[in-house]
Length: 154
Figure 1 (cartoon, rainbow, N blue to C red):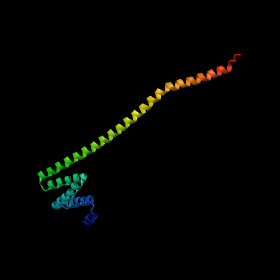
Figure 2: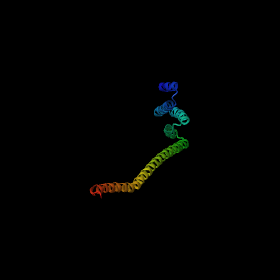
Figure 3: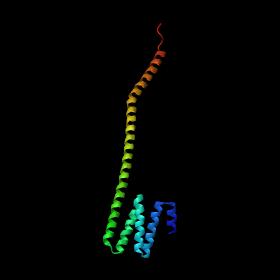
Figure 4: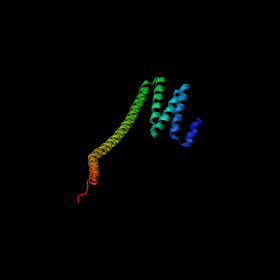
């Protein structure tokens, strides 16, 4: 309770939501199911408003367990369904992020390969020209040597 008061003074929403969840767990363990439900609902209200999906998942699971213990199976089913829907949306969101990251990596590698291929093609196109230049240098050198060895005509 003291930690909740401190967190409320600090206006730390996430920690406040966690504290309510912790209190809900404590009350559940003590068998005070109504107080536990109240705390989980408070935690969930903050978690929902602040988009803390993982905390909401945990709270829905606990609320479902509490509803079952109270014998309210219809409400337990509602909480389980909410948990499942939220879990699926988190999973889908994470998978979309992974797909986007893999696609970006693929595009970067593809672009890098294209640049490498272009450089390789440019290099291959220059090779015949380099070969011609080398032959000219060799021919010039041989020609110069030939001219130096041939006696000048008088």
